[in-house]
Amino acid sequence: MNRFHNPVKLNAGLKALETLQGEMAARGSFHPLCIISPEAEKAGFIKLIKKACNYPELPVLIYSNDDESIGELQMVYRREGCDGLIAAGGEGVMKAAGRFSGLPRAVVPCGEYEGRGVVPENPDEPGPDVALIDPRLIGAGGKECDILQTSGPAATHTRVWSALSGSLKKAAGQEKKPGVRRYTQILAAVTAEIAGGINGVDDAAVKPARIPDYFEFTGRGIIHSGDGALEELPEALRLIGGSRPMLLSDSGVAAAGLTEMVEKALSSSMPAVVTDTSIPSDSDVKVVQRLGQLYKEKNCNALVAVGGGSVLDTAKGVNILAGTEAHRLEEYAGAGKINQPLPPLAAVPTTSGTGSETTLVAVIADHEASRKLLYTSPFLQPDLAVLDPRMTASLPPALTAATGMDVLTHAMEAYFCLGHNPVSDQHALEAVRLIGRHLIQVLENPGDTDGRTALAEASNLAGLAFSNSMVAMVHTLGHSVGAVCGVHHGVCMSILLPYGIEYNLEKAGGDMAPLLEALTGELTNDAGPKLAGEVRRMNEELHRLTGGRHPRNLSEAKGRDGIPLVREEHLPEIARAAMGDGSILYNPEEMDYNDALRVLQAAYKGLPLRENSE
Ligand SMILES: [Fe+2]
Image (cartoon, rainbow, N blue to C red; front, side, top):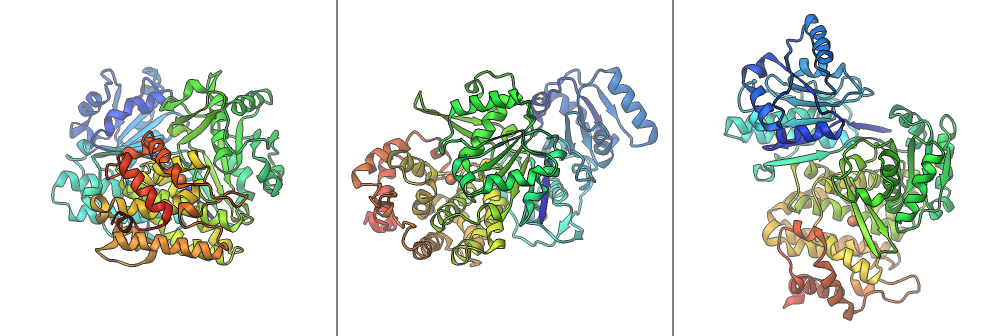
């Protein structure tokens, strides 16, 4: 059984300090106290913090980490009427801030930070809300640090952070500029701390060109993964403050007996107050409104969502109504409108595809107005994900194949799209690795429990990756194929992924080598064409293993009645619809209507892009 607690939101890079005030305000702190180590104070950091954060009246306490200081800290905090804490420095100030658990807290590792303090020693204690790593606070002061000393067994998510910190550490070693070197070292130290100081994964260094000036990574939430993880749900829910859960699911999941399994797991100590299995396959705002009302009527204080993307999206919508003053869900539509913590939400995915149990997004349709509204906020990310292979054991082969290829697409697009960052990269690469090792095997042996766990973890890692970076043209085109012709999302992804690789070869071909290595173990400079070929080979295998139900090109995609869903005359309409999809902005190569049509024509026939153009 694996358990991983990702304790902080990470904002890193040149604008990180500017986000401090907003992060504190989003958690209800408008008058925080800043405690700073003498070393960081000596380096002049207070001025920088005050200026960058627009906190002219910020109360500051220089904290020297002794018995007297903690008394003084409590006194100043009360005297100034503060409502949150900012801790800048190393382990001493961060531990002192940790004594105020339950209050909004931001940590700014700098000065003498050596790789301890960001993550609480006891994993059951709440960590800080956000860690800000800003090169301006790092350029001066502090000594060089060398983290990653210990070794031990690593769960998948731990291994990802460990590989990331190893990779950043190597990148720091190659860096000539002292300021950038120290910044990369602190990033390595914080990520090593999140990994629990575990060493043992040797990875290639992150290329400096792939470290953006600024990035954020939200991986908040606890992951329980493995056979039997479901039995840990009540205790895990209790630890995050739940006691009266509402259980949401859909009729298909209920008919497969999965809702009942979750009800049974909860019944020992925290039975569901109300269970609703009527969620439609396409999330609906009216359903969300009704369930939000029911949640309040039944006096619930937590949500457990059991299902695929639609159930998860619905639960996120209900959580918005449960945790805010909103009367109508639409009030919170858009990016970043939800700026407060919501009630505990546990997600139990029953497919290994969408990664919704970890994404910051919900898509909820208003069918009357024929529109889909997007809700985005770090607070939408579920607090708890339970990845139990029993939940996907009865998934039919064609769905296992399609959802698995959706995961592969999330991971690959998260890696080569323009919004990627080193943390999302590492999550993406591990997801690719797991899909490469387990997808075909699970199709060959559907009872492979470890393989099913690996696919669920891959889905989770890929979800973390793309919701902190973005996706690209495969999703742009795939969304439109789905909207115009009703083809399953995962099927669209499988067919279009090789084209996403081929189309971007010129701009992002250099970035394809780590993806090919993760998928097949092969290391080569000319990875792009091989990667597209490997994805096509996987599709052929999946086609064979599903008795032809997994289509290899758009003309092979059929409905339940066996009639083809996509006709050649649909392609211009699909290409037109794709031009309005936001993910196109993150594709490395530009794409206009004619380009989209050219790709769709090739994908219709299943011909490689270049062959079809010749
Ligand atoms: Fe997808």
